[in-house]
Length: 302
Image (cartoon, rainbow, N blue to C red; front, side):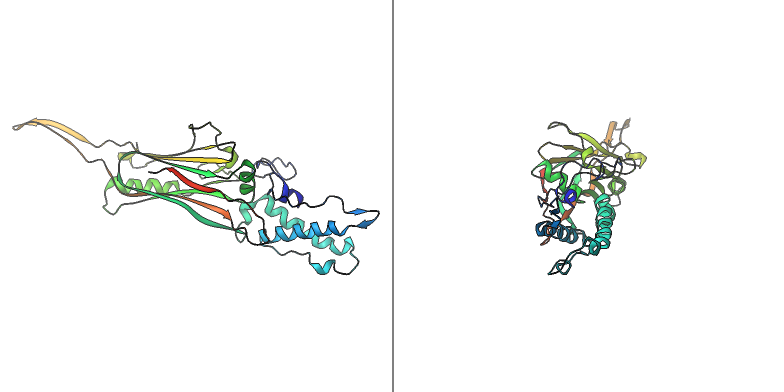
């Protein structure tokens, strides 16, 4: 409980330095001390039990599990370790499972999905760029937020009712991106998620590439969506999304009885493209963990 509540640092390894890439060692940075030495001269100090019970209650509320330790365990009676052993063993199992794999247990936690930003553009062409700043206030706040199961979720859509082939292609292209997660873990080839500490740490204004999607329609195969990112030492994360309509409209020329002629087709993406930034963030219910949630700001709109 001491490590979960008060540990700090990036999510690099397991809680006991287990060398498994998706596990993490950074704690929740709560500053709620769980005393290390339970007794003196053979007598268990009440302050030690108080720290154990308070920590168990806070963790139970956050994980939405039953706290097996109640005041009746210690109220006006002699406390024996054997009386608490079975409760402690199951509780230890429950909290370790959630600590090691928050992504498997976060449903029902003191945590919820929230739309942070929405940005749209209609009937556009060329290159359109959006920049989002996500501020945690400090690196310690960022580490704790992700360790608790926090996620940044990026998604997009395109809506075109004209039936135009270019609009249909952008509907497919944005749908292919799906929901891209930045969280405490990474799985597979990185096409759907990225571990937050793997974000490039370039100095502003530079970015590192995270994701590229290309239109599958052969007529529009030059069109792409790029997602870039960077993580700064002050706890800020920047996400840059580029919509690149690189397709060039068809053109033609010739000559006839009326003389030379030429034409160029329209090259506008019909319909509306929308970018969404959502988060899985802490609710900070009474008695639970108190985790600093980040703020989301569009610094450059589409």
